[in-house]
Amino acid sequence: MSHDHDHTDPPADIELRVKALESVLAEKGLIDTGALDELIDIYENKIGPRNGARVVAKAWTDPDYKQRLLSDATAAIKELGFSGVQGEDMVVVENTPDVHNMIVCTLCSCYPWPTLGLPPAWFKSAPYRSRVVIDPRGVLKEFGISLSDEKEVRVWDSSAELRYLVLPERPAGTDGWHEDRLVDLVTRDSMIGVGFPKSSADLHQQAGA
Image: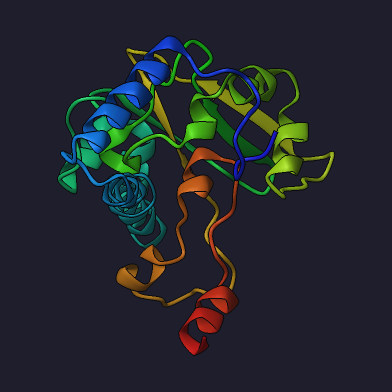
């Protein structure tokens, strides 16, 4: 399984109906499929995850907020203006030097929309939903993440009643950074638990590109 290519499982009935509807609308000239793909990408990878990144950056810089976030995530996230459908009841789990957390929804695709935007296709796929519970380390390796045997891996199963968000470890070399700068280090995948935040070196490299 990889997060950057299509899975071989056939699409579900609802996906087939959506694709058929999209094709009809495109043929009639009512939608631009390119623009639609771009809009989905924006909400899946940029606008939505940016909210979660602000939650993480706030927790990295404000110990009191971090404590509130870990004890009552729903209320703490709402402090920053992020709440609503698919985010009514939240729990934040913290990555530490000893523990790495991952989130999944084994039954369907429950996902914290207010903080992470639209769920990526791989999060909804049957291979991810089944394998992450059975072989989390194997799945992580396919995302390019290799953890030591000493580090415990915990998998949290979201539901219609409860959704999870991972608080990743703050990257080294970012002491004294302003919250707004730290936001740029937080990735969507790091808040799902299948990736790490960017490093300070990554940010410098992007700035020089």
